[in-house]
Length: 267
Image 1 (cartoon, one colour):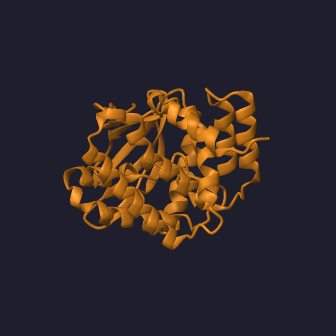
Image 2 (tube, rainbow, N blue to C red; image 1 turned 30 degrees about the vertical axis):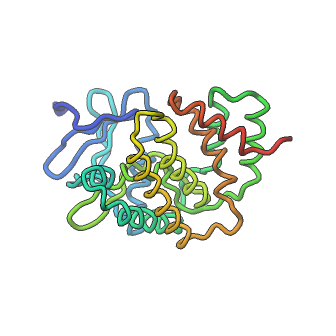
């Protein structure tokens, strides 16, 4: 008999999170998600733990009510974002920690990860609000950039870092790929800077200042670990922005489109 699930403790675009047995949670994918996503995430989770990355360990794949899911050890703590919201004076310490942790990950290699460039190309081909000429220019610029074979989280930001009594734990590896560290750095740069753009006048000047200081401190420290000698991040930014358009977040559309238009070379 299949177990009965209570109300989810968290909801996401691709899955719901449920309390499972003592000390564990279940990430239950929505029924529209391809079956192989579960196997891929399980494989990645085991590989990350083997590499010494602080992340929840995966145990088994299960099926509940026709949906497939992955059981993880439960992490008790709050996110880095929640901590900064309640204690703004911690932003500089957290910015340094975020940079150090991401740089550590971006210097590792794991066999069998999907190609970061292939994933970006797919998203760009599917992205709305790009005319044929602009889409072709973005894809051409992507093709010219070095691929790399390092671990790229793909969604690395303070909301995906859990703070526990012992360690900082990285979660949500759905978008992990093998790629260029500067692409991952560019993605985090976009995530840390686009919020104020999309929010418009809803953010106070003080909040904007705090976000700006956090990003500047994070960026400075990341580049101390992995220098950007060829200004590659700026070359990746319009590509990351074009791929982000495929996520169809309407308040960001105008800013992302402008970033793409200003960042790709004319034919």
